[in-house]
Amino acid sequence: MVNMILDRLNGLLEPCVEAMGYELADLELKRERRGQVLRLFIDQDSGIGLEDCERVSGQVSALLDVEDPIPGHYNLEVSSPGLDRKLAKPEHFDRFAGRRVQVRMRGPHLGRRNFGGTLLAREGDVIVLDVPDGTGRVELDLRDVVVARLAPEIHFED
Image (cartoon, rainbow, N blue to C red; front, side):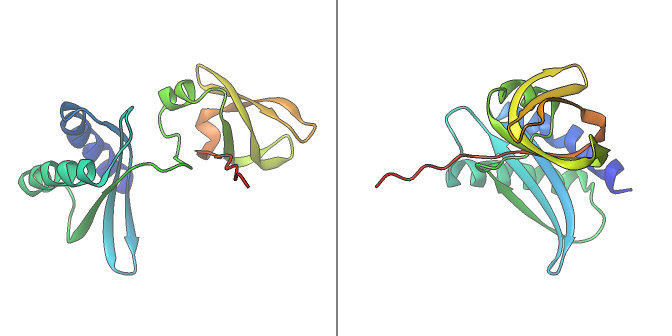
């Protein structure tokens, strides 16, 4: 049921967000202590500021009021994907090739479920990582990936 709602939301909201000049990087619908929350993560090359989130929130809120795709009450949140952004679409893996990532698999692959390393490429439904713990080059099927996120390297200067 939730996946059907998410598919409908994505089909409804992605054109709206893109028409405003943003990418709908990801969306999630979760039940939390304070109730149901619809989160949209938007992006653009120049980055995302508070004004961007407010602008998209206003447009999306009006569209959701008309279409009413979510049963019951919910809160809408719009934000940037952040430094540890989720890689939710195949093109995200293309865009962030060369960056460090953390990947959690649905089941064991090479005896483990979690991988961290440099994203080398996406080849169809397979992502290729260079895992620095001696594992080396690893190929992971995107259909078995539970979540993949950027793993930002933060360097502090003295």
